[in-house]
Image (tube, rainbow, N blue to C red; front, top):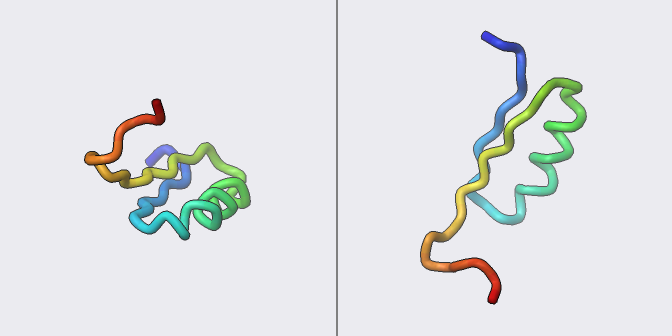
Length: 43
């Protein structure tokens, strides 16, 4: 493949550690965070 790092996050408490792992990988990274579609952007 292309040699990047990817992680899929569904729990809000796991976002920080997922980002830490992505940065520690030393590779281009994508952290996919599942959000609640019922909650819109801040107004």
